[in-house]
Length: 351
Image (cartoon, rainbow, N blue to C red):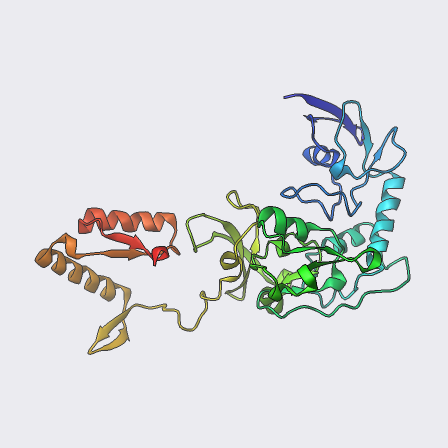
């Protein structure tokens, strides 16, 4: 594969031909801030926060959509670049609520991070501000268009990852906003509530309704696990507060990246549901009574052994669960075929 060598902040960097300046810098461990860029989505170059200075160019190009070429000399933190980024942040804050103390994304907001990084304490421009009603008429996602920075990541995620094209840009100029067709809410659209738009949103415009109502960003411990709903093997982080799962957030899973379906992202309610069985039950005189695990296992073994002895292995059948791990289902299959001696095994996803 052809390669190109360029100089970034005085360091020579060699990358495959066709690599963007942003990716070249990141491959060398050089930081460039971004808001609209996402490695899983097509480059867009809309927020302009990733601008750099390239010798020989008149303007400051967006590094996420500028292809690296041999001999290119790039400066990622020159005075002109820093000034441009500060101005961009000031422009974004000019029409952005500064309610960070009560925002659910406080501590996990890229705009907040960059304002702190570049010392922008307040909006440098005065003018008209939007006052959209907060959309929370669905059980999963809260949309606050007042905090939307029009980065377009939710639009691209819906189109490119989920393939639904539910939301897009509407109106023009100052009135531009992201909305479903006919300016409806998500609940009134074809949205399947996968939440992939929430996963890529860099600010507080899109938030998980249940999670943000239950915990602040710094209150949760994240535990990485595998989704139990199907055999795809998606990876995500359980957000745990005081020993209870209060939400699910995306991580960079090897199978799914950050994409999840509605069940994986929002279907965690069964974990602490009051109807969930946490102890074995044995029916005595027509009534279920709690029992120890040893007592329950011994009873099951005794009854299965008696049925096999009297009626043969064909009289037995096993129903496993798609909520179990692949390893657990393998053991169940092994137990059914090797111990019980039957091939009568199926799983709940077929029902």
